[in-house]
Length: 227
Image 1 (cartoon, rainbow, N blue to C red):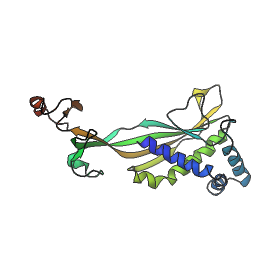
Image 2: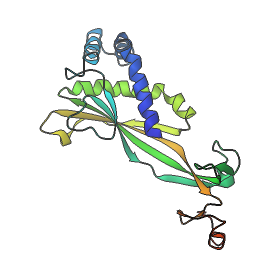
Image 3: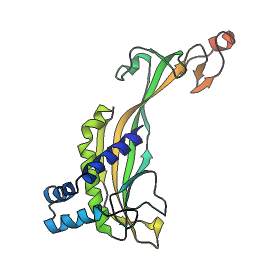
């Protein structure tokens, strides 16, 4: 699922910087035009022990963070995944499936059906006390996402777009001093399912249980799901 692909990319990107803190300084000097002293400050914060201090690299989590943390963090939050188009049989030609017939999760012959989704994820950067941390890690986030662009397309994402928002105080955690900055990631992805043959059929999107052998008359009169 796309959330997991983003989760993996962020953790792998952060590991690249964890392996050598000098890369953090290099990134902020070369790509963000910070002074050497400012970049050294970012590195010092990045290399703090997150278990004993308010610092360290961001932790990647799914959904909104809890009030107890961890902070700083990257939160992957689903904004929406509306259906753009639906496919059935030969209309699935653009997907990575051969022909109309495939094997479903039970090993039975089934017809592949699917739909095209426009998935939007809010990648939210949370930091406590120091708003500068939120800004630093936001730009690190953008760098990791852009660096992973080719891998995302290889994983089946199309029409990828990113857009950011400015830093703002996070009201949900008041009276504590929390900050958040958001990067929206959007991509078109395909979602696959099966229309069972022999065990049942779909009508108005619902699977009618039973087998063709036991309930032949019922199943024969059911029109397969086509929209």
